[in-house]
Length: 97
Image 1 (cartoon, rainbow, N blue to C red):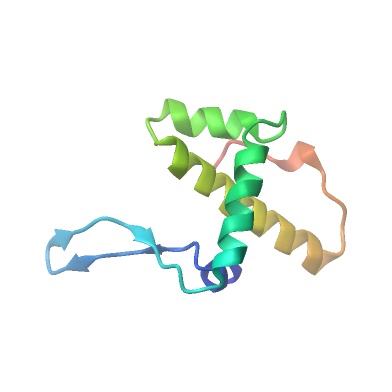
Image 2 (image 1 turned 135 degrees about the vertical axis):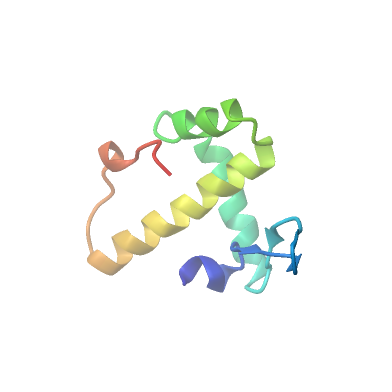
């Protein structure tokens, strides 16, 4: 729900048997998406998140899509940390999707 609030959820463009392109819904605050994208770009170069970025790049994803995947994951991790009042543990970050 927090990913949808920020507008980083994929919006389907389907009709009948046609399956269109997925794009961001962009329904939330644009500044939040901008900050998360910048955080994803910085995280893609860090030792914790770089393996995840390289994993998606090797699967053939464009760099922007890989950064958005990392940004969404950062948002989910940050929300979970806030909700459970715990500290970040980089050992829990895995390549599994």
